Length: 101
Image 1 (cartoon, one colour):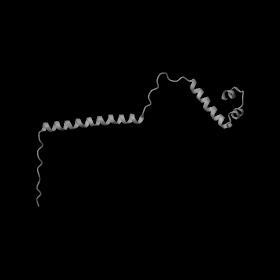
Image 2: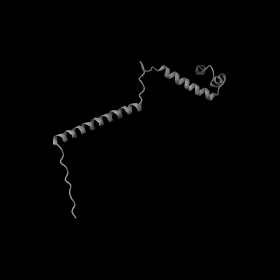
Image 3: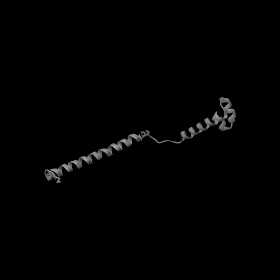
Image 4: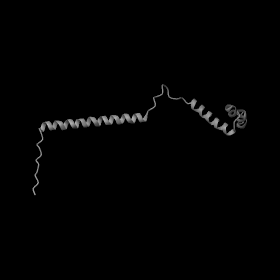
């Protein structure tokens, strides 16, 4: 019906009447149909479409990587602190100071 109207064989009013719809609804359908046809004639990308990127999953993976790096860094810091303790030997006990009256 849309192609008949586009070709000038019918008016939009006649086409809508034959379809049993309002002229406004006909024009809405015509717009959708013509848009769909225009999209169909434009070639898309070749090959299999890429998987959609899950932004939340990507953000969580990035955060996990960052946290793992922080954990590794803190473990290194603790190991270095322990090595310094070993090199310096036991720490001297702090002297207690008696308070005098």
